[in-house]
Length: 267
Image (tube, rainbow, N blue to C red; front, top):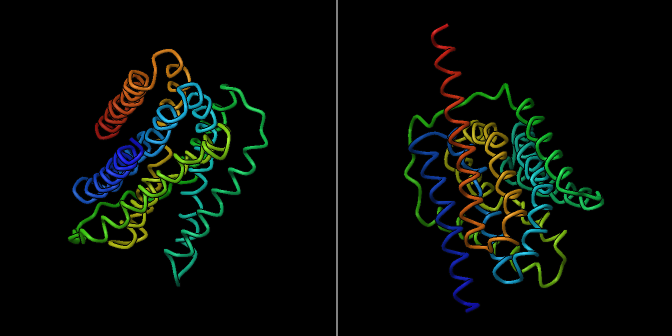
């Protein structure tokens, strides 16, 4: 059973990273950035918290996962700043700054006495803050595609899967607070950023980053619904309901965005 769960975690995480990377190439980094906020790493970790510990534990962790999304947004902001500032060892230093910033933010967040209202307000406020801070970043499409090495793609996807396996093992050692906060680590977004950065340029990465806060509302909704439905409906129906809520947000956002852009063109 343990071996099967391990394989499932690896396969799902690898599929998400590869899928987002191909989406960035064939559609646009903008779309990949928005969809990177779609429940992926957090969904996997919260599901396995529920499967391996209990639905109640996963529901409590989901509240802290929402708080942890503030740290995930700080992660992408620091990656953006560092990749913009450093000329040498750009990817390495940007990654180090982002990871350190994430863990410092998580450490600060764990001191806050929270309820569901605070857990919603803080990441929503951070999302709007970073939407504002990223507003001047240009949306750049990939003009000349580079054939991705399957070896490199798999290695980075395996890296994402390894993080997910590590985080889903945390409940054995820590409580729902730390497990929830750490489950917000951008497990699928970070490898996606690395793949785009290595293969193309930091400008393409910045396009992905610019659109992450918009997609993050989907994750906030997902974790909020998980916290409410897991104890009632269990992890299977609870996951389906939560994904439906997150998907509905993205569909509504797409419709509103399309309507606004059409009006702008007419003007």
